[in-house]
Image: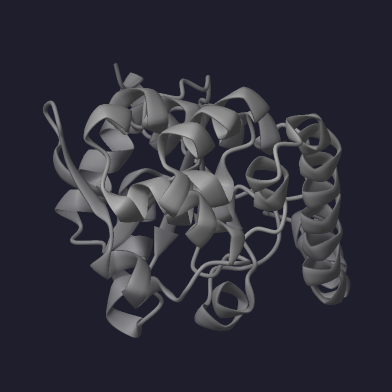
Length: 256
């Protein structure tokens, strides 16, 4: 069940004609990898018309910026997230995080084209990041995101393994982080396993019958991705710190 503040926020964004995609914890719930989250994470288009619609929705929700940066196209395109806290009745306290660019993901128009559309009770149709894009967006330096990637892939395998398409199988072999399931996939789909080797070197452990090597290789993969995410954010940190100083100064002004 969608928590009522998120329900209200989604209705508001839809009625304001915002072009958005659900991501983060709420998207994980829809893919069967339950995650407790009271926040709403959205990817949005950053054209002028859509940003105006976003601002209308935020106004209806009485949402105020709580962290840096400001809501503008330049910041969003560089990969920053914009954060808001709602005060409208029915959405009190809800935090909304807005992004347009994520490391490892294509631009919004591509995300939109391959989105999953779900029908939510009393909300209507809502676009959600497709599973490969959601997994890519979760490859961050936050430790909590890695168990979620594991659960997302496990859930998808358990739900679809008996009627899997070839592209799904290759995706699982590329992204699965559960050694036992990787071994199962290699045995069940040997041809796809060979194809997966082109995208993921650790698949060689499966082809050569060395499953014991999977765990350290998986840890190496995670370490590389975490470092890549740190590098991605490093040039953005100075901008964030400058915005934070400006925001603190703004809040100290009389009447703010």
